[in-house]
Image 1: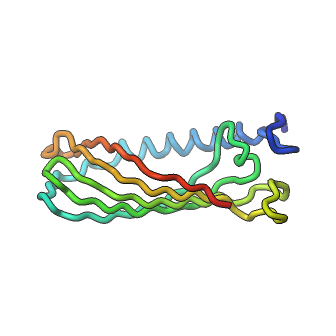
Image 2: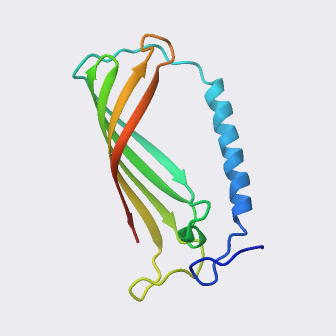
Length: 152
């Protein structure tokens, strides 16, 4: 394994190459599945219509993150609330939580112990702008602002 030293003693980045190959393969598979899926029928929401959605996710810390040397992939989830304010606009509130498991026996010491996971909590206010709403495949742009809170 080839690695470089970072801010944490003994950290290496040699496994990044393997992670990038796996990430590229997963992205390619997701792209093929998205292109093969049939387009959804057009569905219009009226003004003041609420909407609730959820998602499950799986992620990995990448690139030049010192935390990525000690914490690997992990599960997460999100809840999204949306209120349509017009046929082609909506306001939303999103809650996300992503946990990354400890990938090695070593790692940063926090208050005398080695944490088992590192998690990110995200709260966002979203603005949705829909484009060509009556078409079979609804396109939209999302703008968001919010808070991010890492926790060990």
